[in-house]
Length: 178
Image (cartoon, rainbow, N blue to C red; front, side):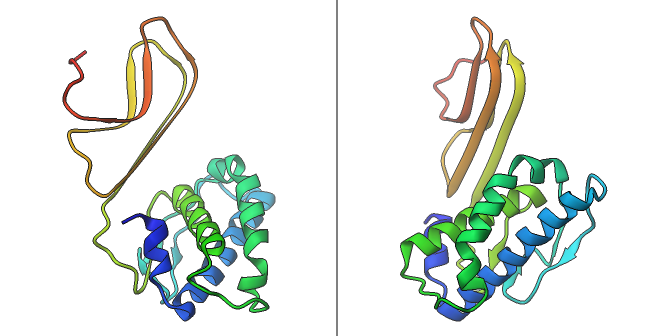
């Protein structure tokens, strides 16, 4: 089951509270960035609509810079729901996708997954990323023998040298050892 589908299983009240939390969190991150607060901000206690984590670790403001456009756009998409003007319907695929996207950005900035109360917790989530100027050998954001749950891997590489290889997710054992 994907994270997106697990959000759709939440009731309207739980999803509404989750939207309010993510909306406020995105606004706070953008505000801290504008104010030029220290590189890593302090931990934030999460409200009862968040099952995990109990507290969000400090945010990496360099990642806020990197995801500023996404934070602003997703926050704008959710404004009418967060303010209570539009009703929240967990069956609204466009809405649930926007909530999932904002949750992923907030989770990335804080370095920990955000799980809402009432959401299934049997989902295994593995995330990895590579950000490199140059790769001369082999690099993978996630390398695993088998796939279990949700796996996300992203590779952002400026240049891959001849004979080099950069991948987001490498599954299986058929790859020869390097």
